[in-house]
Every structure is written in C-alpha cells, then in structure tokens.
Length: 327
Ligand SMILES: Nc1ncnc2c1ncn2[C@@H]1O[C@H](COP(=O)(O)OP(=O)(O)O)[C@@H](O)[C@H]1O
Ligand SMILES: Cc1ncc(C[n+]2csc(CCOP(=O)(O)OP(=O)(O)O)c2C)c(N)n1
Ligand SMILES: [Mg+2]
Ligand SMILES: [Mg+2]
Ligand SMILES: [Mg+2]
Image 1 (cartoon, rainbow, N blue to C red):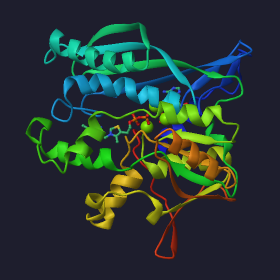
Image 2: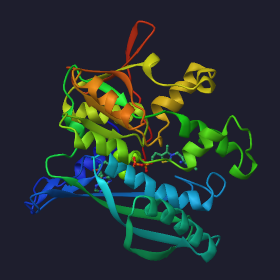
Image 3: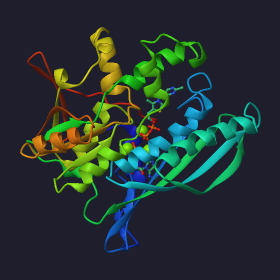
C-alpha cells in the first residue's frame, strides 16, 4: 500500500459521533444526510504552486478553473449535482498581484456559473512562498443513488468516460516549455486537457439516475491507482485490457513506456472510471450515446483481492506501481 493511503487510514476515526454521517474518509467525497429525499456531498482538494501548477504550466484563469474543476470531479464521482463552493487562499508575500488573484477567481467563476454553483465563503491568509488554493465543494444526490468505489462485483465491465494520459502528456511539454511558448497544434489538445479539465458531471448524473449498480471513481492520480482504489474498496481485482484503452494516433506513436507512464500513472485526467454488470453495459452504452457522451469498455472485474492486472499481447501482468502520491 502506498504511504499516502496508509497514513490517511491511520488518522481515520474508528468511531462516529453523528448518525447523519453516511460516507466518511475513503471515497471521493464525504456524505451526510438528515433529509429523507437527498444527501449532501462534500469534497475538498488543495492545489499548491510548484506541486500542482507553476506560472509556466498554467495561465492564471486556468489555475482557478482547475482548482474548482477537480472538486466538481469528486462530486461527479459520487453521482452528485454541484451546488456551492468555498475557497481558502494562502498568498505569498511577493510574486502574486491582486490582479493575478482576480484572474484566478475569474477562472473559478466561469466554471461555477456554468454549473450554477455559488461561492459561499472561504479564507485569506499569507504565506512565505508558493500560492496555495483550497476549494471545498458541496453538492447533492438523491437518497439511495450515491455511487461508491465499493460497488464493483466480479464479471462487471470496467469503463472510462474519456481519454486518458492526455493531461500527463501535456504537462510533460509544459514542464520543458512555458505555456506562452507552445503553439504546436498537435500538442494543443493535450495542453488543454492539463490546464482546463472538464469534470464529468453529466456522466455521473446519468449513472446515478439509472437503477444500475455502479462503482465510480474519478481519475486524479492515474488509471492504475484509481482502479486499485475500486479493487480495494470492493474486495475484487480489476483486469484492464491495454488495447481497449482509447488512444489517439499521436499517443500510439510514442514508445510503449511513455504511453504507460501517461495513461497508467500520469493522472489529472479527471475522467471517471467505473463498473457495471455485463447485462446492463449495453443499456448504459446506449444511454451515453443518446446523451452525446463517450464511454469505453476497458476491461472487467474478477474475483480476487485488490489486484490490478494489465492484459497485453496475450500476457497478463500485475501492476505493482500505482500513480501520483504525495507521501
Ligand atoms: N489529511 C486528510 N485528513 C482527512 N482525510 C483525508 C486527508 N487527506 C485525504 N483524506 C481523505 O482520504 C480519501 C482519499 O483522498 P484523495 O486521494 O485525496 O481522494 P481524491 O483522489 O478523490 O481527491 C478522501 O476520502 C479524502 O477526503
Ligand atoms: C508543476 C506540476 N508538476 C507536476 C504535476 C503533476 N501532478 C501534481 S499533483 C498530481 C496528482 C493529482 O493531485 P492530488 O493532489 O493527488 O489530487 P487528488 O488525488 O487529491 O484528487 C499530479 C499528476 C502538476 N500538475 N504540475
Ligand atoms: Mg477523487
Ligand atoms: Mg483529494
Ligand atoms: Mg491524490
């Protein structure tokens, strides 16, 4: 187990005080409810200058957009509708102007307006260096409709809602060359995927509104890591078929170790990975088609104990490495 998850488990409370708490630490977001019809869903994520962005990798508006988008993505992974957000910002003593901060907030506001979310609070503090921005997002899901990582069963289909590895490919170029200097049209979709991730709210809602049993997780740390989270939470194993993972011709041209680095371990794609029974999969595919959304069958669930396997060229290997971790 990676150190980050191990440490989070070590600080996870073993007793609950509040009976309204439905889901605590361990999924994309927490859930509580004292309402008969709906549940409140809450997620928090921090972005740190130098760790999640630099002035060279991200335009100012994109920093704001992404800080909110990653939280909306966690709400989407629970099947929730986004409603409110709070922003805490730690501002370095030099290097960041009020106008810069206004741009970051403008980036957040455009996305918030799109999803009709209200900014309802936050906090402003100073810090020696490196801007830190923490967003808390609140949403709601109908009672009984939340989509947990623990819902996967053997023989289920494993699906993803869109391309993987694009953000990591984009970041690789942004770390070599400031975004102000990249104009190669072939790279632009990947740069955009890194800077302007699109949270898959509509996909999460379609999945929540069906009566299908669906496990769901958003892909922030890479496919291998997020598949492992579903495998662990559901006490099953995941088998990913390499050739079924959607890849652009540009990605396919790269050496296989680069493809693996971006797709399996890169992270920040903010697509959803989920599972559904084989019988219901064709109905789900049709539903996504009717809604002009993409969805791809990339493998299956097997009985097992939390392993993630990769099938390629008639060979099956167990993935031991996971994705991006902070500890
Ligand atoms: N420092 C912390 N204290 C308490 N809970 C935490 C902490 N860090 C992460 N968590 C919880 O651990 C789980 C995994 O976190 P994380 O990997 O950041 O999820 P995600 O990738 O969905 O953002 C989540 O339920 C999150 O709320
Ligand atoms: C300058 C820079 N270097 C490296 C990265 C890559 N990176 C930073 S954090 C991260 C993983 C996702 O962030 P995390 O805080 O783990 O999100 P969470 O899992 O909590 O959703 C990745 C791939 C980046 N985005 N920017
Ligand atoms: Mg998540
Ligand atoms: Mg997080
Ligand atoms: Mg993470």
